[in-house]
Amino acid sequence: MPITYRYLGRTGIRVSPLTLGTMNFGGRTTAEDSYPIIDRAIDAGLNFIDTANVYVNGVSETVVGEALKRNGHRDHIVLATKVHGNMHKDDKLHPAGWGNSRYNIMEQCEASLKRLQVSHIDLYQIHRPHPECAIDETLRALDDLVRQGKVRYIGCSTFAAWQVLESLWTSEKLGLNRFVTEQPPYHLLDRRIERELIPACQTFGIGLIPWSPLAGGFLTGKYKRDAAEGEQTKGRLAGKTARNELSNPAAFDKIDALQKIADGKGCSLGDLALSWCMNQPGITSPIIGPRTMEQLEENLKSLDVAITDDDRKQIDEIVPPGEHVLPYYNASFGPHPHRV
Image 1 (spheres, helix red, strand yellow):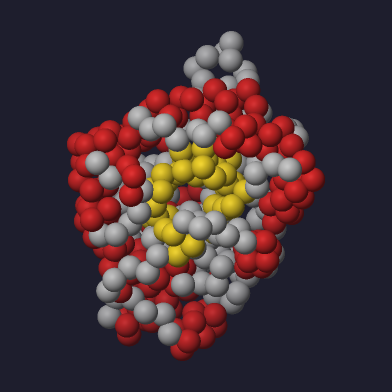
Image 2 (tube, helix red, strand yellow):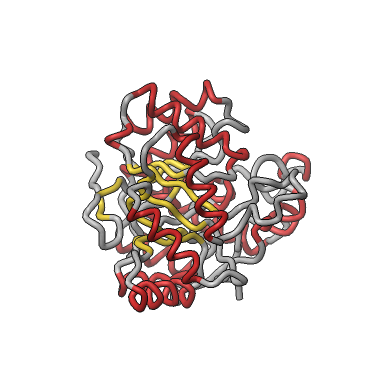
């Protein structure tokens, strides 16, 4: 099925309905294995690539930059990266080396440009909120980068609805470039953003680029309620987070019910979850994070899975709108603002 590209928020650029996330590249996925995955995603029509400075401490950006240099597709790609996390964890003399301050944003934008081997970043995102830093400081720094031609558009990630609106109010008041995207956690078992964030973003023209649409692999069916603990705690779902999530019987009950819908459609549970996410109102392009070529190929199949009104009705009966059963998030950044 041909890909139908979508406008990114209220901007005039169009992106694919799936975004290639690169958190594994250069880490769990070697650089040499990452290059063909990036090439295949582009060949399949995905023109939106998302990375971040903290992914593998900058190595992911380096891999993405080298891949685009090799395949010559830089001009065809909407390239997104993020800033916020600590890139100086081993340097006790650099306490300002994280967050959303002008100091950190300016320093890290230059570093990302070098690693990506590009003259500009298409979408530069604030990776997490930083309540101790005034939003006008953050937005002024980002606005300067846009005016300097180093950044085309700006966005945020895992902001609460009120934080997104605060940023829009500040941008309008001060005449600054505004966020055009928000990147929230969203999947079949965590629908909290439907309560406030999605309506707010729809109202103000903010594109939504959900992360973890497969709940860290939980929605692929790879985790079983009766599997041994050692088999459960591999990969993304590891440690304390895994023990909490994988001991949740309600989540497994819903997985079983969702699997029946997928079976009836002749697709995998993961493809059902991705197709549902990308076709939800207000959603622009969920981020997939394949570790292998096989995982990418499986993710791409979701582009051919149609979600009917009857499917939505059945899914809403299993997981009602706004409900959360498996609130997965990266605990290293602290509690995310959609938690209740």
